Amino acid sequence: MGASLGARDFAGGQAIVGLTGGYVDSRLAFDDSGLRADIETVNAGVYSAWRRLGFFTTALIKADRHHLKLRSPAAGFEADVDGTSWGGQMEAGYRIALEGGGFEPLVGLDYVRSGMDDLEVLGQRVVFDDRGGFSARVGAQGFIRKDLADNRAVIISLAVEAVQDLDTDQTGRLVSGGQTDAVALEGQKTFARTRFVAQFQTGGGLQAFVQGEGRFGENQLGGGVRAGARYRF
Image (cartoon, rainbow, N blue to C red; front, side, top):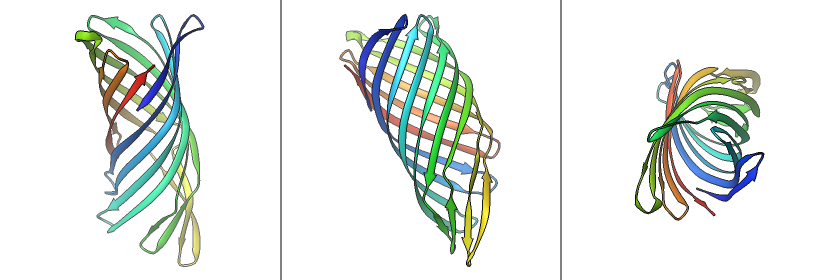
């Protein structure tokens, strides 16, 4: 869900500022370990966008509250972990108009800082250090638009991105039997991400959407679905 404060003239183009919030439910599976992660997230933030001719930029600052359920059939355990993250996203692109739709090359830079509660499994405790880092992405998005009666419209889009995580190591401490050892979990640095979005626009400023996202890497496969609405004043 979200709310936009309307368009304003800025730097020779049009700019908007708004509020956003939502709920995300996603799944991750790791092939080598058999670990499964179910992630529920509630988020809120502030966003802005600017467009001039075909060029556009977007920026988002948001905070997330996560609940993770970890399952490993091979190791025989289940665990629940809560966490909080905050950060920002910046994206830039150029829209190439086509009949009935368009095509947009995209580049982006994201920053996230996160913290997690301790994980207790099989009589051991893992204490996670706070983690922050950047990721860069490049890709493209294509979309089609179908205009309906009474200023309504349906927009379908598909985006594909290559993502390079610039800081994927998660550090912490393993506490077991009165001993403490330092641990480091190295994640995958390069992966692909896809995003499919279906939007419905009404003539009164209300927009509803459903978004599906997939993440594909050498040792991981995941995805999620998000639904929401925004109203433009």
